[in-house]
Image 1 (cartoon, rainbow, N blue to C red):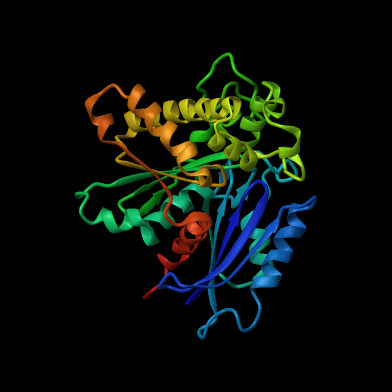
Image 2 (image 1 turned 120 degrees about the horizontal axis):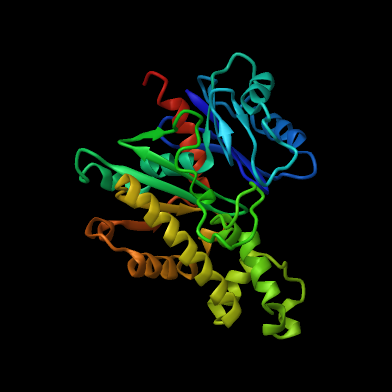
Length: 318
């Protein structure tokens, strides 16, 4: 019952062979490159080979993709992959692996589902009462979101339920690639944080020798924030305030219990999580919002892969 899990992000694609126990038997990650469709084909060809599909063979494919998407049509239009607009992702994978069932959901929905299945939240869920909700947020090249209710992803009619990255938190803010103004993604995504920091003197804030050989990216920004560079810390504070506003909006609307944060920017750990928790505590009004728990995913970069696998494994007999 080995399943192939695929995680489609704005800058990288990942895939893994996953057993029903949660064991990952093979894993591969590739940068998106200039031709996202070619990268997808290479990814599948390199990982779905004889000898890597388990004793019983490959039985299905689960895909978590950056959005927006349309699960009914099997199409995706990731904001950060301009060449994919209403791209028939489910069909493309089906053509690469004929006769296998393919399930599609948002990347953050899969991240939350993976946390529920294999992460620390799942270990707590049994004691959380009869109605349990988990909001997953991927903070990376873009910002995605998804909701899991009682162990099942809530997708909505098109599959975009919980897409928190495109809640507007600044009516006078920048125009988002999605076409709206002041989306969370324009403030709190990795590239947005870097653009703001550079525009506010980030590179001038550190000694030139420190930049030798360093990429100017969110990882470097996080390193500077950890070192106490003021403009880098302020970039993370702005991101945390925007994320906190969006999280509390979702929690107020849907009475969410728990939030799990994943993605490359979330890998900065306390550099993001401490000001984010502070922002939520500062902004929370109604009593029920004070019970909200916000954690980084316990599964790291594999959270979305576990969730994509769970999309398929949940449909198969044990």
